[in-house]
Image 1: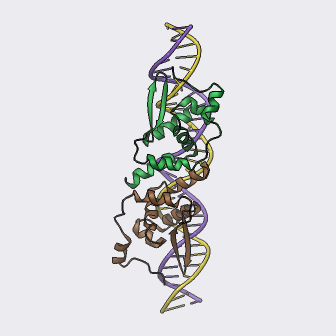
Image 2 (image 1 turned 135 degrees about the vertical axis):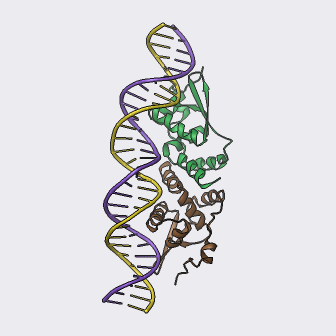
Length: 109
Length: 109
DNA sequence: TGAATAAATAAGCAATCACTTATATAATGA
DNA sequence: TCATTATATAAGTGATTGCTTATTTATTCA
């Protein structure tokens, strides 16, 4: 673990919207369209955040039909530290459950 | 601990030179002029890094004569996590001891 | 008082940031 | 085949980043 790697890892986390994304992912695997609802953000904005998280190896993706399901990369060396960090952050107001109540939760297939 | 506070804290850490500074400070309190030697960096560059760390409450300063002695802020809520993070990073090649050997270590007064 | 030293601040610059809107790609299903 | 849906990519924008050089402030000491 060198300084430059740690820098790019921390830079990937150092954004409140990406931290929110990671907080959600620590409970559920989710797709882009769900994040657009959860974060009230445009689809390209979410997509570009996911790309940054992916480049930093913080998340993994799994294509399923026309959806891409994103998950936390539990194999990452810094995964335990990430989980601890996320535990310090409050639960988001908009929950995946509230999305389900509105019928906006995507159930793939 | 809200998302925006965590973001500014992480952004303050997310620079390889500032991580080096913090790594050094985890062993010794040091002044700007020592960092210019340790990091091979200009004095204003170091000074501006210290200001960022200070704004994020990661470090404390103590004026002593014409020197300003910088230390890690051990009272910060995230200090334990910072120490853990720094422990994952390698020891810098240039050490405070090697500075002393060259007679470049400042002994205030 | 005045030279030397430590540190802070200012201004400028190229690179990167998080976003936007527009468009492209890819899969589904009528 | 063609409209719809999910996602990715492209291009542009204003703000911020980490540095630079130049200057200022503050302290020490001869």
